[in-house]
Image 1 (cartoon, rainbow, N blue to C red):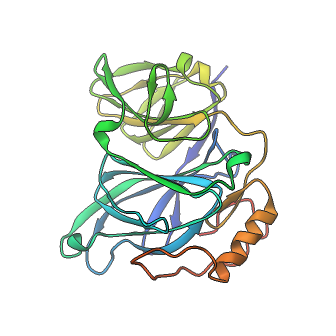
Image 2 (cartoon, rainbow, N blue to C red):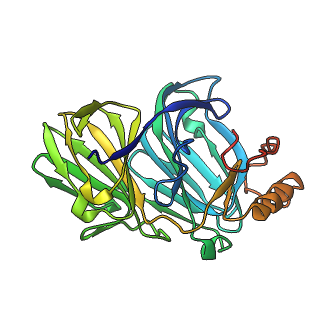
Length: 299
């Protein structure tokens, strides 16, 4: 029996100045473990006048994870953090009861054409931590656990697997692993995985269950323990997942919660300008119209 429960194709989504590839949520699969939202950003060439300028906007009930392959983003938030995100670093912001942040092209790059490419991810918080105090952590690339086995390099971006643990302070059992193959390789990770598991192919190709899959696809496993696949030389993939929550999660715009009333309250607070401000950035993104289903993100 095949261990592939579903194959998710990257879909185009407009986030303002940029067209991204949306991977989660998907109609047939809203979450994989605690992972509730994944956008593949780029690769885009950034130049005048099309910079990344995502003005201050709010979040609740989740942690955001930004991981770049190319380029740079200036992150500012209502906690007072101002950090430049560069390739290989992990930008981890936990919204909890509410935080505001902006994402913009750094000033020094606005006179230089450059490429921007990366992943933007939301990880839902456990129900008992949805109203926690917000916090922010930035982990540079050298701090992330990495190892090599038989010509395959592994980097643990977040969470825990086997004897490896990332310094990113996650709030539920999860994993996000980068795998790059220099040669044709067979990967057997099932014994180390837990909960639900997805595999995102960034580049190259993967063979699993007698089928070949390529870039911009996510394979979701029926059983993480049976995770086994072949990677062609030059392939890069990301395995993500973890223990699912017992409760459903709802999304409205940038808000995530286990109950709809919390989303309505957050929406009203943003409309009334009651979220904390971002020091040094007085921009504001108006909230989109109400999503009647409150079950998926409206861009």
